[in-house]
Image (cartoon, rainbow over all chains, first blue to last red; front, side, top):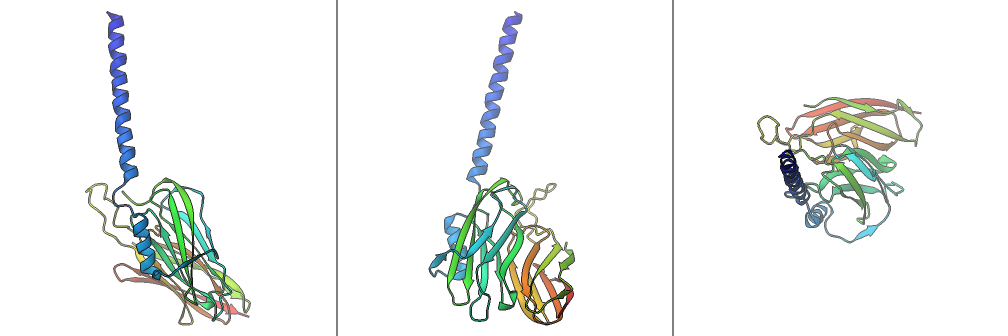
Length: 159
Length: 108
């Protein structure tokens, strides 16, 4: 009799565990699918809104971001563009985008020749693991871009 | 709520020197996507959307911010010192109000 009771208890516990696991799996799937996340098309749209759709060159931008960000609410970012920063040849602006945030735009930074160096540091929110993209506009109208993948442990877009 | 704009600018600089300016302001930077824990309703968006730095009245640096800029926004940038004068820093809120502070620098 006692043996039988034990068996039923174990089986019930097992059933509960399996059911619990199922719920967790469903929650995870839900959070990965995510509602209304900016995808590649939205990123392309945001970039087009900021700088038009001219051809992009690679390089000249140094994007300094942590490889792994524990807290997506405050991710330190530093962006620097290689330029002499003279009246004739300088960086007009750099635009920062996050590929998978609810909105791709992060910040636009406008330099002048009196900036001396085209460099800025700030802190941004990342809703999850994703690429951060920087697009720089030069005084001659040319565009440069670079991107960096940041792994985010805890997302930072409210909720 | 925003308050306490803080900037760090060197008091003196050599002519031609590229200095670093650091700025910080207290602001929640509400994204408009966060839900109130008690009511379950979305907290309306309220962020600082623009930051401008002028020197002797001329704009030398500016930045447009979106909700992806963290709370208590920090911004560090550079400036090439050419003459003595005064910086002014102006943050503009979604509601139109502005917060500002000034800093003097002597160039020798």
